Length: 200
Image 1 (cartoon, rainbow, N blue to C red):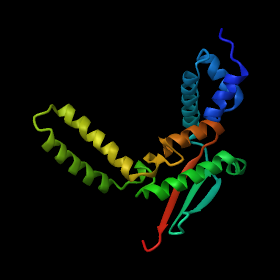
Image 2: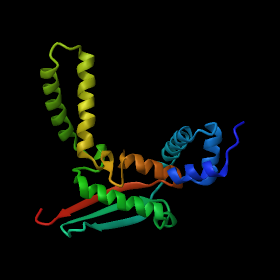
Image 3: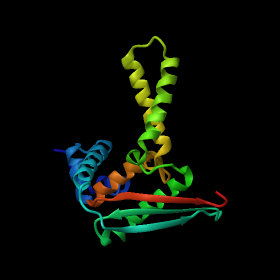
Image 4: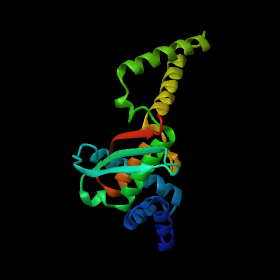
């Protein structure tokens, strides 16, 4: 069995923000490999997020952000299960990061479920027509894959939860939310947002 030292546990904790005992057990499971342990923690976080998804959220905050130039303002409603979590520093940081993402990208919708069916159908018809034209003669399954890929890209352009999370743009807002749920152990949801721009 691999011996896990405190320095490696602290390194993983600093990288992920996960509790010390979770970091130690992930490192043990991963045989001391820090990167593999990160993957273990991420998977655990997704499992916790899936289990928490159905739980009621009645606490949270309305977080307001005004851009440094004073010309863009954002309000986001982010909810959780308890007021204790609503006061948590990681939760507050997430609220700020979501507000920055709204400021930067000005998404049209919250998530895929919020996009009206007519808008999806209209875009899919356009994408399908363009794909059929550009991939003429290709097998049907190849065309279908291309249409699906282009629709995923379109959703990414339209929805907040698929946008890069501004403080760490290697992840989407949804990925960061899932990781936070895994870390805290409570259901956390971005419920709505509003963005105002001077003269807009």
